[in-house]
Amino acid sequence: MNAPPQLKIKVQIHCGDEIAMGPGKADLLEAIRKHGSISAAGRAMNMSYRRAWLLVDTMNRCWQSPLVHAAPGRAQGSGAQLTGMGKRVLAHYRALVQTLEHAAQNADQAALIGLLLPEPRISQKS
Amino acid sequence: MNAPPQLKIKVQIHCGDEIAMGPGKADLLEAIRKHGSISAAGRAMNMSYRRAWLLVDTMNRCWQSPLVHAAPGRAQGSGAQLTGMGKRVLAHYRALVQTLEHAAQNADQAALIGLLLPEPRISQKS
Image (cartoon, rainbow over all chains, first blue to last red; front, side, top):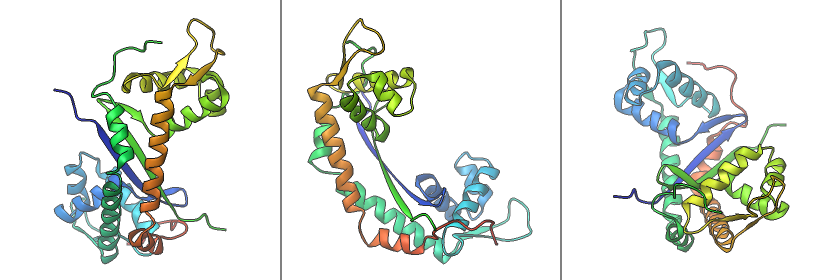
């Protein structure tokens, strides 16, 4: 069975030299909402606590107010929630990505997928 | 002066485990069309000949026929041109990206940009 041809759309929002939002950060926000802590969200995404914390820190510095509120002065397992700002940014980001995925269902995509092989050839012939 | 807030849309077309087309490969195709050789295109993109050649090889293996024709049996400086397939794939890809950039000019993007800082804060306050 061949894997299906696939179009991937990645939306990044840049703030200075930082990436304020992207697919991985949006997934992390959802995992924090689901699991209620940065460490549990990181574990669920197979990501170190340090990496998850750094992504949250970046997000918290790029928007008008922080997206994640973590209970201060407690251990790694302490709780964290999305702020109102976090929920708003996540909702707008997901809606924007959905708009683009819908817009991509057009004749150009159909033409590209029609020209694409299901699997790459092994070696170049030229 | 602050850098402007920025939304970036990256479209990748996957073929099995390979990326058949994306922003870098599309730019490389355009550089080959402009410069008439893989090595000159690589130099113009600040990329080694080996890297440029590998990207071309991947593209040439992922579509129904190769996107780039390189004169066989000659040195690195030999000529290369886009095939008819290469021109078609590049045109559809650029058109698709343009469609998505247009579709992204919506209320969700405006809301996100409105909530984004022009530059990240230095340190987290939470």
